[in-house]
Image: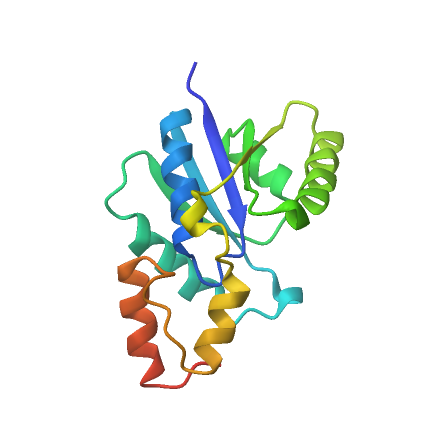
Length: 163
């Protein structure tokens, strides 16, 4: 049976922690679809298209990984794409309560959807997109936090002006 997993998130921007979770996911599932949420309520630094493009660049060398943007319920997207598993990352205890509630919510909307929680490697456990965005606002060093193709894109955007 072909197991498709959906890894939803805002990915504003995608970090090495996200990338680590993606690599782990493709070892567990036949296909991983990275779903980049529009998430306008979070007021992302990058547009949906910029985030989708950055994720595509980051995973371009990985097999069995696709990237889509979305602006509907995660469970609806999973059903549309044939995914029966949602991948969520857990970095610290502070993530656990929110992720547990979200997993229960998604399962209440569709009992056929399972949520799998993966922890990034310890060296990536402190990385979050919000930390990266904060560093970017103050022109801080982010090379060790982002996949290199994403760092290159953001570096070229810095010469313009980040929102």
